[in-house]
Image (cartoon, rainbow, N blue to C red):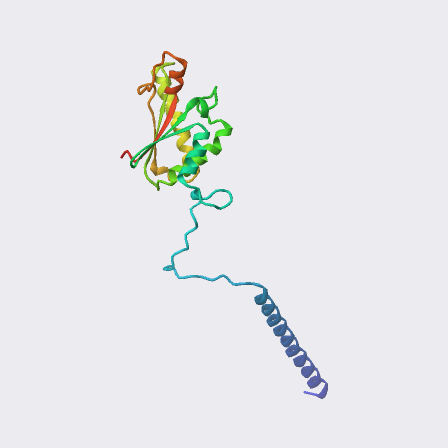
Amino acid sequence: MNFNGFKFLFLFTSRFFYMLLVIGFLTFATESSFASVYTYPTYYPESTPPIPAPPEYLLNCHGCPITDDKLREQLAAQGVEIIETGDKLEIILGVDRFFMPRSNTRLQYNKVETMKLVTRFLKTRGYVPIEVYGHTDNVGSDRSKLRRTKEQADTIAAYLWSNGIPLGNIKSVGCGDTEPVASNQTADGSAANRRIEIFTGYN
């Protein structure tokens, strides 16, 4: 190999190693700066139990605890009747107050928030089985009354489920006019019979 060939080989090799050095330095600098601004996630072993979040149903919009008495007051103001005997709880919703006049199976828009309060109150009892029964007056055929009361009970059950109560804990039944609580001979009596009853603790 003559002198020019040796010189060319030397220059080529020098530049090649110089490029490798520059690339290595840039790679190191990039990873170091990325690591300084990026916080790597911390992974905990599977045996570490998660920290439970505070129960949402016991807090108001300001994060303060809501007591049973406070919920009762709010529900009573919305026309919800609560009957409690020992561990047994019954919540009564008037159909005329809660459902739209014509469809009779859709909640009124202004009662959606009330249903959230009902769900919160039920959750204070724990995740216990809940039974929803629909009732009506003596207007219409037996078949239509059973269908209407079942659809109304299903609507309430769906709202309970959508607000966090497990679907497997909820049972909905349409009773038609088989269990009146007042005479259907008067307007007030018929209105009292058109109702939704929510039970817990009766199993």
